[in-house]
Length: 306
Image (cartoon, rainbow, N blue to C red; front, side, top):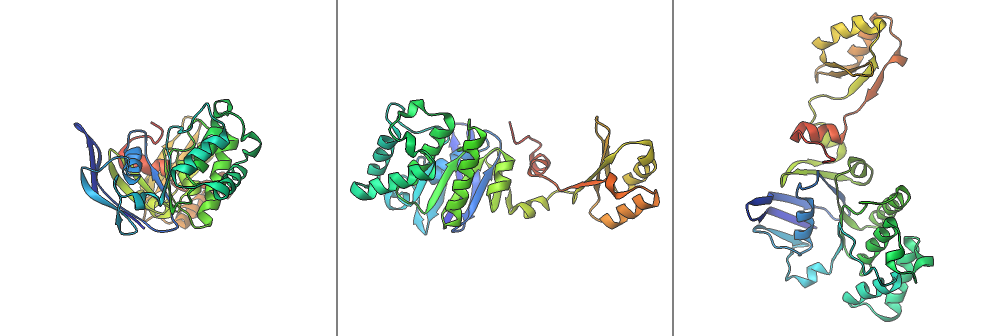
């Protein structure tokens, strides 16, 4: 559906995107995950046609995607990182303005506005000025403003910044339903729990480069260990702990836990057999799969929350 081929974008001496190639399939919920300044918003602005790449091409359904391709851009909806609403106007007036920009009018526009406000639970606030809304309410209104023209592809650029937990969950549920109904979504975030919950495929970006791309399970196989086993650091487990460095990486936390990451060749059954030989019960051990944060640190050495 959407294709980026060797896309580069520079701002003076800063290279915001460096030869990024990416294909998004129809119906995907794709996550673009990375710290602030990684290139996520630049990618979104290029797809939306707000900026032009220095090199490379972008196409949507085979049609060039740029500032001059009005037909292609009508297939897009953009939820920007910063609220794009008229604060002095009420919710209904804002949606009428955005709908008219897409050529909507009359009973069709009224029906779409009614449905949009109902979907994000703002019907009873439709006559209130946006400046009186909470941050979460503004985010929800900002979201449906991008959907009035029923786009094929929705771009969400960190749409939950400053949102309360209830509104955040409401946004998640609404986006998940839209995706189930067939809408293709590209979602940029620096919160790994958002990408984990929402996205069917994830790209990890930093310094303008895609470092990894795939489903969550595919990405986690890139870590040099399969999973982590934790157990208390006590005299009873000391003998087991002494044997484990030969089978993997063993560290001890400041709160008294051993963390064991087995080598790829080490089978978990072998670990538990070793534990049993020391008469240690299974309830002492907890197994934890690798995380997106661990993968990002492994690939880039930087925290996702910078």
